[in-house]
Amino acid sequence: MELKRILLVEDSINDVELILTALAENHLGNEVVVVRDGEEALDYLYRRGVYRLRREGNPVVVLLDLKLPKVDGIEVLGQLKADRYLRTVPVVILTSSREERDLTRCYELGTNAYVVKPIDFHEFVGAIQGLGLFWAIINEPPPGSLSSARSDRPNQGIE
Image 1 (cartoon, rainbow, N blue to C red):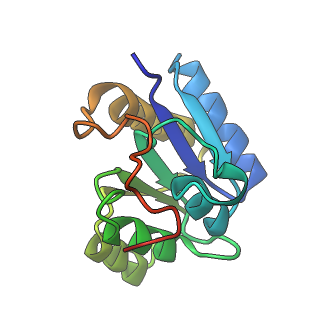
Image 2: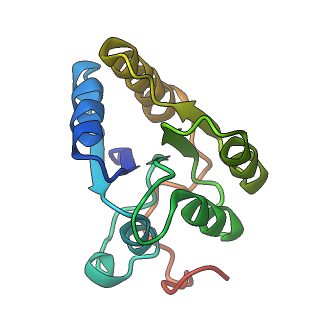
């Protein structure tokens, strides 16, 4: 059985540490791949640049911050949900933004969930543990979503 990977797209080192700690405390055996900006997230998902030789299948879930350097989270979400090979990968927006326009736009683009990061440490840890448990353990991914890269799949971007 292939290990289910979580792709964490987050530029805040503090938030990355909190998220990794919360997932570890819940004893989730998942590998968490951390990327720091939207461009790197797209490179990972499309197997470009330093990720061009990546063999493992798609992540079981993408935890995506909105306010990212280079390419923002809304653009990343839009590209994923417009791509026929990646649109079934669940994307959970994990952000500090409570702006209605961000919430509305993310759901219009097809996000699977929109979670506002709690300010309180214990609430934040609890929210991450719940997300990890649901998406990495309880939720059943679409058939074939964890398999290796398809040979007919382009690695340049959306189709």
